Length: 187
Image 1 (cartoon, one colour):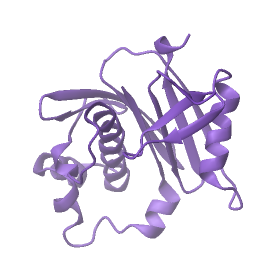
Image 2: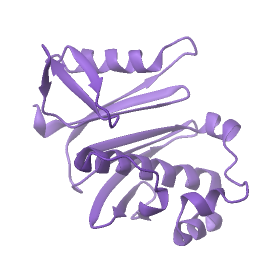
Image 3: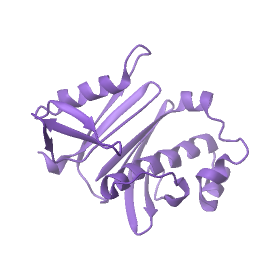
Image 4: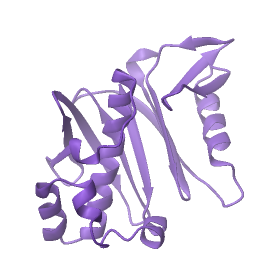
């Protein structure tokens, strides 16, 4: 299983007030809140943890086929500035994150060492993000002719109406989007 999440930091700054009363308490464990508040850059730390939780949630949803709201159930720990792990129940997902001044992009998987392909895209304001991202996936993955999501929001690749057995994750937020595919499943 693989998951990814992108946060457009400019959009997050304009649309989300992470400092409002109750936000941190609702989304993050006490330890995560301490890490955020003691960080040199609390804003980026909030969205790093958010991105890690979302990427792990996508892995978890692929495995267990159930959707739920429970961000505090996903417990983030940092190994380094960009490497971490997320635990929920008895599951552990490992994450790697790209952090820039414009976005945070996290990829999570069940294994610490995993080979994957990913593509990052930038949107203009006129673009239908989902269509653009799906077309990018189809251009990248020549063995597929459609991308469809199931009732849990999990994307799958199809060729002539047959599901291709690969783990795929998509994400878009603001001006940025991306997808990731586990490499060992199709190369």
